[in-house]
Image (tube, rainbow, N blue to C red; front, side, top):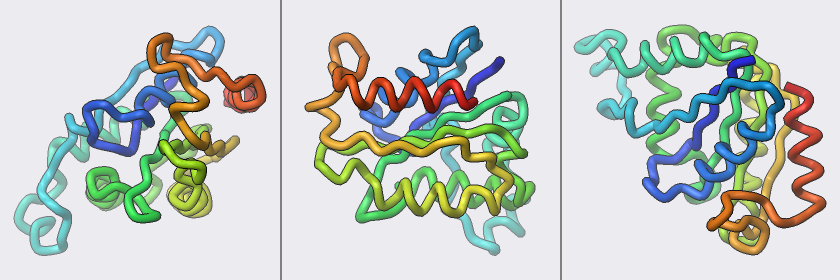
Length: 173
């Protein structure tokens, strides 16, 4: 199985990228590819830009990567209760190629933040809207208080309850 994982964040030190990487590596017998959405940066989407640029190469490449995967893991950073501008822009451009952005792939949706909310607001939004874009969401998990529950040195969750929850979710992919 080929698992594609990424953080819906453009931070170079993204805790969500750390979480997505950890989760992807829990999937047994999987070939894992970790994306960095910085590699798909484009001008801010607008209909005027779309008329001028068409479908940018970066959006086409991202859509192709999604299509090549058997399963997708996304970990969402939360900016003011919503998606990061970087992810939303990439998603907007990609959805203009095909509204079925996620191409019926099995998905695990995650989110984390340093605080106790665990970016649950954006995760709820993402999980609720994903089926409209042909996502087969198998599970969604919010990891609260990232630095209290994740060992950055080892790159692993430390909270046994959250570890079990995440392992169970990865078996659904």
